[in-house]
Image (cartoon, rainbow, N blue to C red; front, side, top):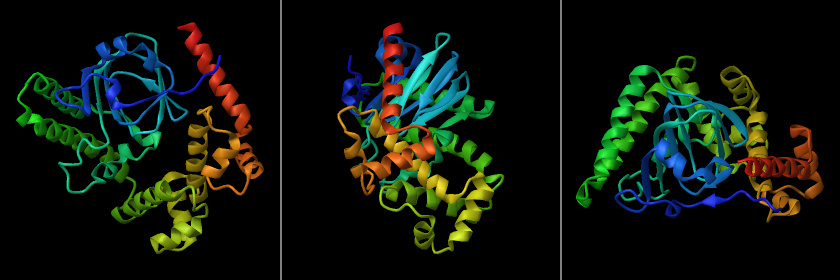
Amino acid sequence: MKFNIPVYDIQNFKAYKEDGILVSRFGYYASQHQHLHQAHRHSFYHLVFFTKGNGKQQIDFKNFDVKPGLIYFMIPGQVHSWNFESDPDGYIINFAVNYFSSFLLKQDYLSHFSFFNGKPENQVLVLDEPTAEKITLIFEDILREGQNETTINDDLVRILLLRLFTEVGRAANALQQQSLNPYNYTLLKNFQNLIEENYANLRLPKQYAALLYITPNHLNALCNDCLGIPAGKLIRDRVILEAKRLLINLDLRVAEIAEKLNFEDQSYFVKFFKKYEGTTPDKFRKLYTSQQLHTDEST
């Protein structure tokens, strides 16, 4: 039996007020879309706030606990699955990439929130009680607004969403900035953004240091001090992540993936992947897809 990771578009789901957004209580959504418990990808932004339930979830091959008070955010293209041990509930919002395009002057506005940077460790947060209470009220306001058929008020939903992002962003930034001065915080964030834009073409810390107008030693010290890992590992980890995302697409040959990631040839890509993952691309693909098939057959 051939297994491939499905990719879902926002049009696959019933609209909320207008095309491009879905808002629902999570318990209802999870029961109506059982197929989404298995590994899948989205072409849209996605967030869930849990008020009930326990279990596990995986975002880009990293595992996280599911528990009340936890919120997570995902950007288009990430791989995701759930495994609940008890019935979950909460709130879910999916919205299209262009949902804010006619509303915000800065098209990259969402990327300024750390939880929309595509790094799972920044996308999953356990909220303090005051923040959880604030966003619960916002979710309820958004759900109520969905019952209002007056289209002129649709921008109110966008405003409420931005308020939700701001409240969560304040809580997340307060934790991050406790150990970072403003200069280092901005510098590190700029480095991470540059990796996201250039990981397939630029592989060396000195190339990024030049773009940031600092020395390679300064960049390496910044990453070690702030994250506990060298700059080179941040770059490699992003390349490995993209390789994994591509490997679970069975329509792509390993040679094609190597080309997409700008490796000199397939053998160099295989050596690179095995060195840092401890297994070959083919073995990773077989292991991951067999695990998903086993999950599908047991549900």
